[in-house]
Length: 119
Image (cartoon, rainbow, N blue to C red):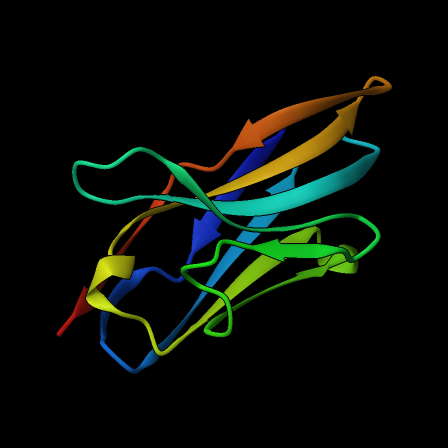
């Protein structure tokens, strides 16, 4: 069974730093794009950052210059380094990955990890 397990969330002060991790496990042959989404209180889920298997990266404008997405293909893990977070970055952060299973790329989601930024 394929699953994504996130870690690293918690409470952080504005201007501090926090690193989220998401590890994929189970039976799959490869991983395509990996991404982080978030859902703030009363808001819709939104894309924060995405990294392809080739290393191409895109960020939401709101986090550009503050957050960094990276991946370790040997560990099947994607990271989100959050520097200088702001209270508006508060929310549940979800990992998403497209894993190839049986020759087909499927989208999987992690369970979510809470990030709270205090002012």
